[in-house]
Figure (tube, helix red, strand yellow):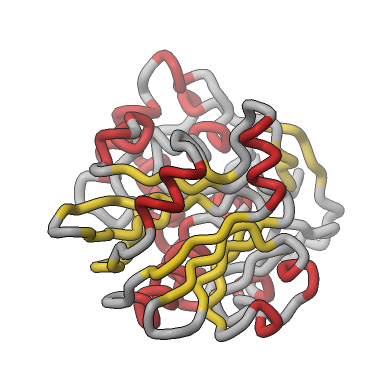
Length: 290
C-alpha cells in the first residue's frame, strides 16, 4: 500500500500538471457501474455515479494537497468549493496522459476506472488494479468524519507529543509497538514499510508492547520515523509492487531499505524472522532487535 512518501510524490506531480485545469467530462468503468448496480461501492464512494459524473463536470482544480495517505483535490464550480478525496488503496495510481494508450504499463491500462477529460485537452486517469482505492466527492473535509480523526501530520510540531499521549492510552499501551505506529490515529501515514525500517534502525522488536518502551525511546523512535519518511520522500518513494508516479515512474527508496523484505540482516548477517502484527507481515532481526 502506498504510504505517506508515495502519496506525497503523487501530490507533487499532480500539482505541477493539474492545478488551474477544468474537467470537461467524467467517464467511469463498467466495473464501477456493475458494482453500484449490485449495491456495492467500488472506488466511487458515498455518491451515485450519476451525481459523481454530473457534479465533477466543469469543476476546476484549484489546489492539490496531501493529508496522511489521502490526496485532496480542492475543487471549485460556480463559485462554490468542493473536495475530491482520493485514497490509493493497495494499487491505485494517477496518470496525466494525452490518450489511454499513453499509460505505459499494460496492467494499469487494463484497470482504468475513472477518466477525467480536461477542457484544455488530455486526460487525468485513475487506475486501480485491486480496486481497494476510493474517490469521495465532498463539500468539505468534515463531511466524511474519519478524515477528522487522523493524527497530526508527522512533520507538524504537535505530532510527537500526540504520539506519546496516544501510545500511553490503555487502548494502545499493551499493543505491539509496530501496530501502534501503523495506526493512523496515532501517527499519520506510516505503514508497514516505514514502521519496519524505523524499528530496525532503533533496534526495537516490532512485537514489544508500547508500555515496555520508555518515553525517551518512544520520542527517539518517533523522530526516526520522521527521518525515514523524509528520506523516502526525497527518494521518490518505494516502488515495492504497484506504486507509480503520474508519469508511470518508480521511486528508488526500495534500494535503501535495510530490513523490509530482507532475508538476512545487513548489520549482523543473521537470518531474519517474521511475525504477523495487525494483519501485516513484520520482518525483523532476532539478533539486533530486542
